[in-house]
Image (cartoon, rainbow, N blue to C red; front, side, top):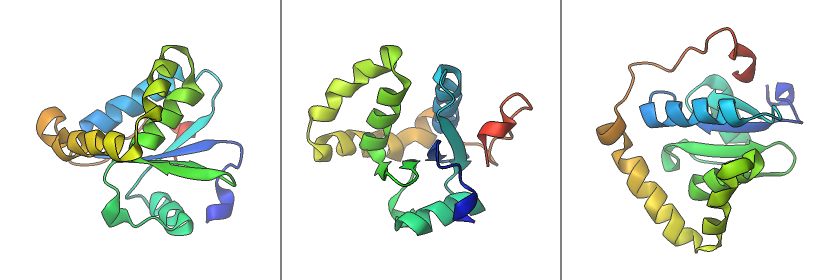
Length: 138
């Protein structure tokens, strides 16, 4: 149920079978020194529940959503920029790109998302996290 989502964590919903998305999730986990993020696949029961709760149609989203419980949610390029800003460090160098019109940054994002399986490949099933990071997934 949506009530069991930690209110003090930012939830990243991602494409669980995409190699690029998996790589990004691994990078976020390594860079998340403040333990701010939790992760779930867009197609998991919890992912579907969150999307339903925030009113996002799964057929319109094909790779990333950032949900900050009780605050807001972000999709596509805006989610990527927001995640980068929360991570800080060199990731914050991506923040200035958020000043460009959302239509432009989402167009670039959509182009990458559309080609991600062709460029990076696809898994048969969602990643199973190892024991050291299991607590970051639900």
